[in-house]
Length: 221
Image (cartoon, rainbow, N blue to C red; front, side, top):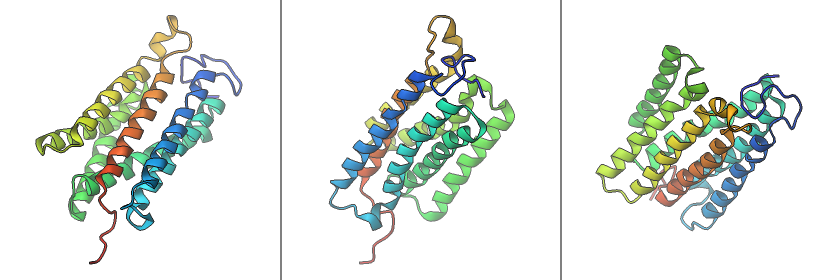
């Protein structure tokens, strides 16, 4: 049994983290709203929006995987938690680069490779435990801020949404980082706020991609 969060604090059993468990439902709710938004877009069929559909499924999988992790807290459960998150981040990076930044394939590959180098390099330099394990998410935040800066320079209408997403991410990372430190004053910890804010964050990010409306594949004229 892995003990990683304030709410568990050494307790055993499937309901050792009831608040952390329940708040994962927010990801599933966010996925439902994102799916509804995607379904009403007349210009986005399966051929042109397969990546968005997959992101919606991954958003729901994040909620399920995290619920398993906070229930069982074992080695296989942490994989169920981490894998959907990793897949979502990587696919979102590529989809954003294509649909919003409108990068060509070679530039898109460079963007993705740059993220991998930063992610692996930062954790290798600092260790995975820094900031209560939140260090692994710093590259995603850095890229999100970079995306906002580019859109702001372009006066893109998605820039305000992306700024909101950046602020949400900073807030959620702060709560995740301070979870263990808060145990003395708040027995349930702060990790549940990471779930709630991230569910809103991921919905906003998906909503921005859906509204961008660029086909995932080029349709021949």
